[in-house]
Length: 293
Length: 300
Image (tube, rainbow over all chains, first blue to last red; front, side, top):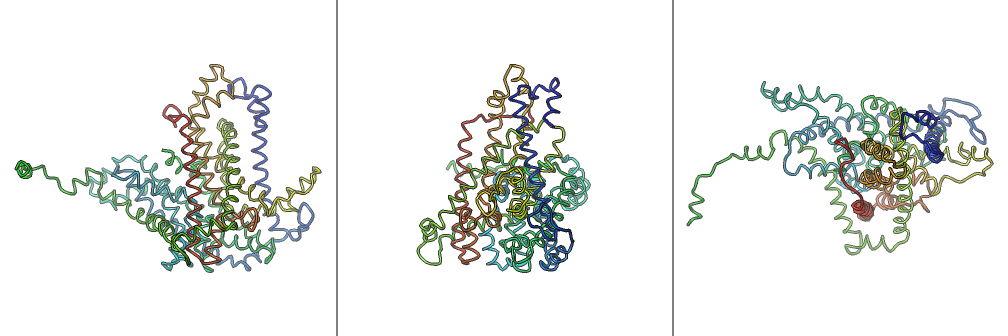
């Protein structure tokens, strides 16, 4: 349909498909895109339908619908505790990565000190190297320091990619702010701390909000680092979901899917809020742009 | 003697504070220190520590872990298994993303599409694995649709195909959004000029877009590869973790959490990191055969 729209605009758009070959190519592209999204939506729908179904064998839809799996998932998987742990971890990670990341981003945005390129590289690496690769040595160190196996270890491990993320996302935001505003604050006798609290944080609020919301979404979904460092009482929702799927057959599949739906809701609510403040392509590209230089 | 004269001559004295200030080191610069110390303590140090303890095996000499890894097919086969998944998945994701990004960049509702595609990235691999288990399973909607069209049931989960599909489902949106950001950075007037001069779409792509995109595509290939190479949850849940999809991260996990051999686990993590580094260096070094320069009038 969209391909036809494009073709209809042909006189105005010099790149619109004109020859039959080009039209076929445009059609193939849209067909792939629609096929991809359709399958993804169907996959999510299958999880949601299964979580509300009673018996689902050899048919397109379950025999009847019920909400009891949510009750049983809530009890069987101790979702109350798991959710509290998840929000404790996520809250701590968001606050700490802001506290550590924003001042560092400010220093990197405003000063050209020797070794700055090296420091930026230092912040890029934890974002570019996948968590699985550094997660096992990190967990080993955390276990030796008696952090891992409880909440503090999970929080520390999750901070490793998020602190650099906040730094790299915040640098361009800070560079946009006119340094004369800060100079004026200095003239009136504000120290670095007061200038930060009264001038920079209010000006940077949209940027900080966007960065921290993305940290929040990433941390809810961060599986590997939490998986490596969590003990029995410090599992987050995504790790609990992994164990439930891993041990499928122990519990009813619908119960697992009820948990999966709860997980999706927790993630997507925050994603929707985050998307009000950022362009989705930024989620992927901000840091990578830096890498390109 | 002349040295003494030189030494005695009064030099313009600057305080340490000024000296540092000239190099832009002052109170503001120091704010970078907590974050740097954090990354050193929890990223650089663990990496170096893992590197060192990988040479301190439980038994045997300093190379025993690596010798064990490369002499046991159950272990060294994991490298081939991982490459067999990661290379096709990376190529599929990145190559398909190019034509789609080139078309989508001229679309009006780009924001809606990018929003939809961020969702699979955000939900993560664990959820995608669980969703695909149901959706692609023998009684799932996908197989039902195939049977509706008269195609027999296809086994899509607990094997190589399942993991591959999950890598595409989570990896394609990432590769696409990255390519899209590079494509939109190319000045459209370059292509219009080529079009005015009579270049067909294929020629415009070959001589204008591809050279300008080469750098971005190299980075895209690196990032996509590194991500697919470290596949873990879907290889366990959706694949055959004892067979075709026994990837290297599973071997590392088993060494650490089933055999409690941190030294061996670190050795496997180092081998994993080395494989990723080798491919990244290979991709980046082949990049110099392409044009490198500005992608457009100050916009890229």
